[in-house]
Every structure is written in C-alpha cells, then in structure tokens.
Length: 139
Image (cartoon, rainbow, N blue to C red):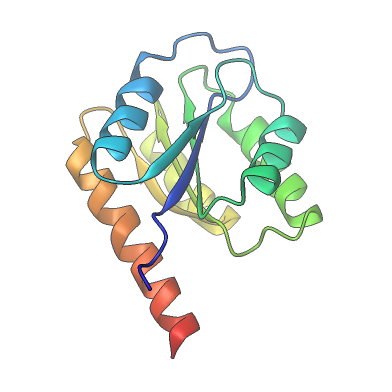
C-alpha cells in the first residue's frame, strides 16, 4: 500500500494581505508531490486550527510579513492544542527577526524560514520531519 502524500495547510494569519510568498511556497510544495491547502489571507487563529483539523493535515505552514507573529502564533498554537493537533508539524516563514526564532522554536515551530530560503529547502525539511514522524509511528 502506497503511503499517502504529505498534507500541508498554508495560512496567512492576521491582517497581512501580502500573499505572494505563501502562494510560491504552496505551489512549490505541490510540485514536490505534497497535497497543499491554501486558506488565503486574513485568517484568524481559530480558522487556521479548524482548517487543520478538517483537512487532516500533517503540516501547518504560516506566512507572516506584518510583524505580528509573537501575538498571533501563540494563539494559533493554543487553538491547535485545544483541538488535539499536537502531532501536526508547525513551520513558519516571512519577515521574522533572528532574535524571535528561538522563541518560535520553544513555542513548537520546528522550522522557521526567512526571506531567501529556497522552496527546495523547505520541501526537503518537511519531507525529513514527516518521514521521521511516520517512521516513529511504524516502528
């Protein structure tokens, strides 16, 4: 039996309306063989967590350029925990200062990708992380 493709939700939380980067990443992950759900712009933490639950995703990727990541991301993590989505891989990208990266990792984000990160690097990271999770489940 073939393993199901990695399912990724790409979301733009908050009022940030710039979504070109999120769309580029979504398309690249799709082209890499993943199933990608793009929620669009102006998503609330509740909407993102509910979409992750309904779509049964392996990964939630958040894109932010507004600087509101330290306000919005903890709320998204809390909503996901409330929905028992602790096993979903969290990654984020956009304009995130270096000094915030450690805090985001403590929050539960496995991957934090800044401007200029190649889409191949993001896809490779997701494949490796999900491969480890699926390998641990099979073992």
